[in-house]
Length: 61
Image (cartoon, rainbow, N blue to C red; front, side, top):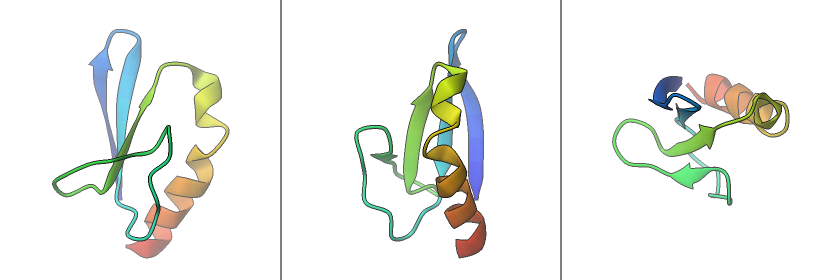
């Protein structure tokens, strides 16, 4: 499962439920219903690790 919300006018926060993923410098641990979160400020950030994380979140739920 994944969710997004605006964090500011130039940034949005993505929360992902990944059960076995280790945190990285971009993918931080989160509390509550989601296990990890990341801030996205540029569109190019979406193309690197995000598709794999979203695929893992979808397959894990």
